[in-house]
Length: 297
Image (cartoon, rainbow, N blue to C red):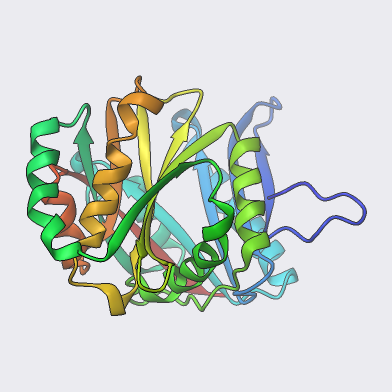
């Protein structure tokens, strides 16, 4: 989470980190417990990792049990574990077996898609030319690391909508509380984590409001692979190809801002047919899956 000093605001999430050691004192496993603090106070997420040579010795089970104890002490009643599976392990990964053994049931199913970089400029030009006639009355804006001041309130509103409008399937997730200060806290946290982000948004010229956005996360220590973060178009502004246009806008930033980047990875809910169509139109190809596994504490 975000460091807190006297008088500083409460962070939006708290993280508790647990370590397992063997009899020789070697760290062989770790767990991270994520606790939202401003909304979804019933909820927590856990990530458990054990070194391959230390598996099947009870370390993962012990770490999970300790995380559950900590979550229950914090009053949480729903726990989620996210599982990322490469193509060779889809449906039969050790992580999935661990989750099912400990009473977790799948709540969401997502498909990972990757886009090789650099993207063919002619392809982007062709898709953009096809979409532009549908987006009359909208203006594309781009930024890096900090949302422009005149858009930050709208970006906060879109953040709140993202928490409810994205496909949640069986995930026990409720509306998030966003304001401009939360946007700024999140931007500061990204910077402290050694990351950058690129963003593009669509502004409705008749109202001056930001009605769509997308963000790409860049790990500065390893910028060869960048990650698709949130993308959202407000329902009342869908049908104008804004999702495709904002994605094109941010992809065009990559060669100048992150020339080392060679791959973009994105995850979409398997039921999110419109966003999958956008990504495949831009050249993303399936390469694995991610799922959320949930249990009641």
